[in-house]
Image (tube, rainbow, N blue to C red; front, side, top):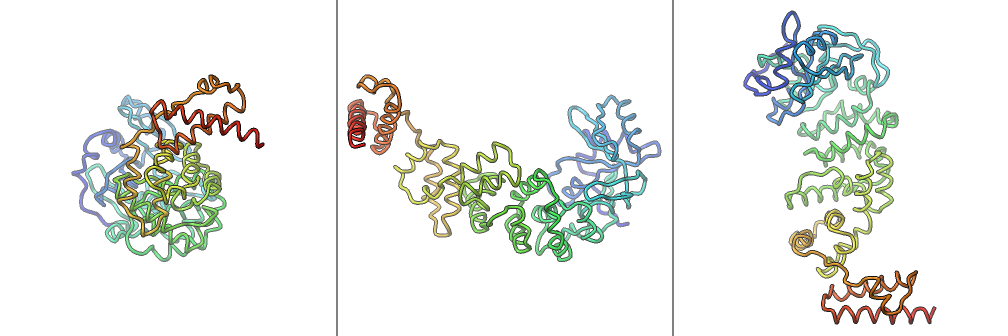
Length: 419
């Protein structure tokens, strides 16, 4: 077993909820360590998010000690050894060391134990199987430290065996590499993922959605998605064409505008050319209603925003509203190609900050006063008048507005006679 430089200086080991749980469990004949992503991130100099703890203590012992310390205890997955302790409103997940006795795809029959190396060996990737003791000592039994140094994402043991345990690991491989890896994908892992691609059909849409949206915002997403496409994996998820150039352009647009990476925006660039694409993705990935609506709005006639002057842009902004205008415009920019003028597109993007659409000044009462009865004709003449008002560039002068009303009414009557 190799030992890494100490993480004793890490603040999250010395104080806070995780430190309290470690102090509670790492005594009286039991051990407790922080495991998984928190250790990986700390060693890579990345922010540490959720902190998971593993222990030799049985779940019943964890709960008893937690209650005695005054912590809220929740048996979130006690049949698999997982208990959540809530300290000062912050949950800390604690799992008893275990090994798989039998596996049934994602399901497994487990036995609790005290073997740290055995517990590490059942995890997915070497860089996720490190643990750190309360004194800061990092333990590595699977070669994870070398892989962290090389920024290499590698399965523990036989890749095909790891994938057969849970085919979601196909997506996790590409996502973890995109987030933490560098250079070429690990060859044995890549070939195993391609060979196991039929297993994607067994996964729920919700689980695929979770991994794909995380992948979309990872730093290495473009290269990982190309590799997935080359291996025949991406089409099984998207069900259609992937536009890798547009995704790369969208990422550059986000950078130019100082926008945070956005998974739905990037998904739109990658896979939405027409509204039908958005609807297909919403179904295949089981997107939320808000996500589906947003993707559909992006894909609806985005090409109309590619070639326009500012007057046209104002009309588009008035018609579809600032939020939809912004999303759709970014997609149009990403699909405009390498010849797109960033300055011109930036002007269009900032239009909602420079100009606020006025309210249409004509109401139903204005046409009722001109002799139009309530009913279909009233709706038609209002639509004609609004179109004319937009074409005239939003005039506010009462005389100009009255002229638009009179001319729209005259057109309605001409159309009625010719019809």
